[in-house]
Length: 473
Image (cartoon, rainbow, N blue to C red; front, side):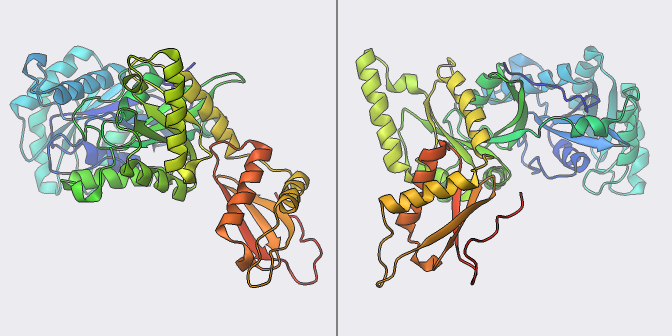
């Protein structure tokens, strides 16, 4: 049903590895051409495997950024986050077709570099050394020190972009030439981007790992474990053929006054940007805490971003422990009512009670992905759209404003993601928020637009025009 597909257009995968603070994330950002990974002097900023597609010399490959390998020996890992980072790096090494070992040319070859190199010799993959921080030509001869590893060495500067061409030429030379990749890239639907948002420790990473059926993301009870916005390809097939998604894990949202470091602030900024680029958002709540004010703020952000939405109440097993079936049904009904009361701006979103740890409720969430994604691109037939709206006006007339009432002449759909409907009226100022909400509710009832944002835009009817022309599709 699901998994991590390799796109037909992608030649292979490349993992960037190395000890902490050698510039792995800076190199990742430089190659993919976007600031996806957080770059900061604090060790251990990167924890999960970040991935993105990169292109060079007409070839496309998937690039993975990884956390710093501080201690290769499992027995010496100081905490479970460090151990989980190491496991993520090990998985990236095993999955990679080629590896770039990043070192610091200014620091020279360190014992930890040598330890990482020993591990890479064991994996049997092609390896190149990126001697980073060669910020000017005078530093380049110092790269010769790394030839002791027995691999090609490229002196470069990720920060300034110096010397990257030779490394990229080496990467794409790992795969034999094949057919035109651009044609493969254009085939098939574009993936739906699903961002997972919530408070710290709500279970976002566990939720994504459960969907993927593998430990793809670092999971820890320590708040703030996830820092980058981590993108993971995912395929759903609930009938009708596979559909591509990109799942985006994000840092947990805490109240701004509680943000303790620059890295945490960067993490939240990345999460907000991920939301603005998403097609669908999962708002994840912790059942053991119930809806909090911070959850409501996150929900309001999603509503304001006008993306599709699914509400997921995780750890539902903790909220229903010891209850019989009748009590569980009553508890669930009460929880759903509480959500509708506290999230009136997301009352159109499907709600699912889940347990990421056991997988309970996950199949229903996947079906909602398909349903909501389809609803965000629904086409509302013009004739039926106008019949539904005029019937709504007949059922409940607009309120009088200073002796005048709103008159609705005609409506057309003008866009998707979000769904946009333009209403031609006598005076847009007569369209109050309450009546607008009523019309949206009637449209949702007519088309079952669960999870899809719907925007009504009222404009004056053009003078001398009985029915405005329909816009071109």
